[in-house]
Length: 311
Figure 1: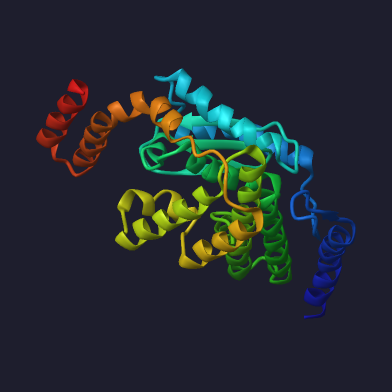
Figure 2: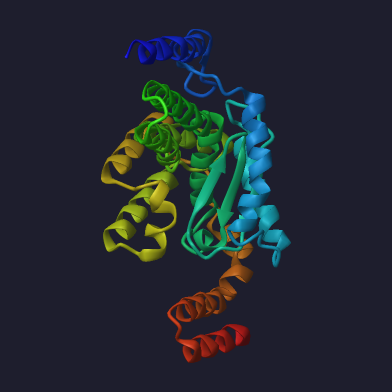
């Protein structure tokens, strides 16, 4: 027993001292909220992580949508307008993915992607800017980095307990739980991060010349779709960005502060997405074919593929 306690004494203090040194030295000012916060993932690390993961993640989610370069350029132009008014200058990138699931996401360092499927559900450039501004704030306000920091701290705490448990099955379980916990923490943004992205995203919209009212109407649409439990939204955007009436109400309050008025861009959005919308039926048939194949309904899958090819 004495030897066991000595072992703990020898190993735990080093872990706690390392954690304490991180807490004492790693404080900074959030570039968007201007609040003082715990930080130990540097901007250089954010950019490096985003750069390393951006391309393979895009590839794993359908790859870039290359059939309409003009549409991709349009998406990037809207993103660049918002990036120009951001509180944080990062090497922002914006890409369109060939994925039917309505979704958009941001990586640390300003790497942002939109799924083709989301564009079908939007009706104006202002609504596009509302989603884009929201994602841009996730990157600018370090939300991804904050998730990584929480994950590292959770792993550190669990590993410390694992060390205390020596080489037992319990220690292995604790370390495994730390890894799982970190993944769960990073799987979606918390309520505070979502609120910040809504708030500052609307401010960026206004500064970029868009009507922030679009963020209110879009969130109202998302709440209705969520109530209907539209499956493709449930597995996509709503999984990481759950809509709620509380978010609608908060956006309405923000609108009172920033003021309505600005561009909606309904005509230009319709024009830029016309080619994409013309192929929506073919993609729907393809997606249904993939589902039929997964259910081992070969004849149905063949029929749907032929339908998709015919356009």
